[in-house]
Image (tube, rainbow, N blue to C red; front, side, top):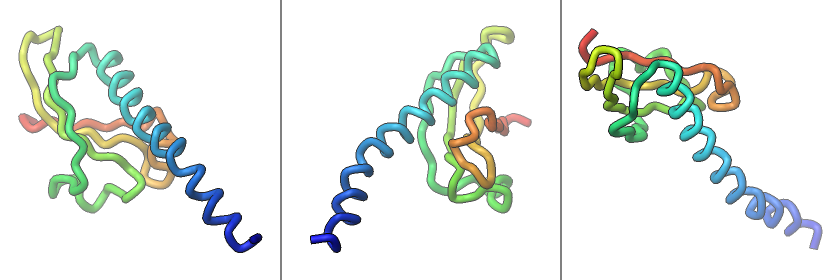
Length: 103
């Protein structure tokens, strides 16, 4: 019976962790948009970063392709967001980096 305890415990903890992880990435995106004064039009999770981010992205970070409306310049911009730090991933909520397509 004891040999089943660990797998059962892991299966019980998996759904709350997935919920937290998805909520965390969503809140990081929303906080970033609010701090930059942009409105998110589209945001898609990508599992492979673009080449310019390839060597500096870890598996613990979340990559998103975004399209936003910039209220200050009244234009639509697209780019790539990297959520989380290299070592801590989305546990580091302040680590958000953007690379715009037009720069």
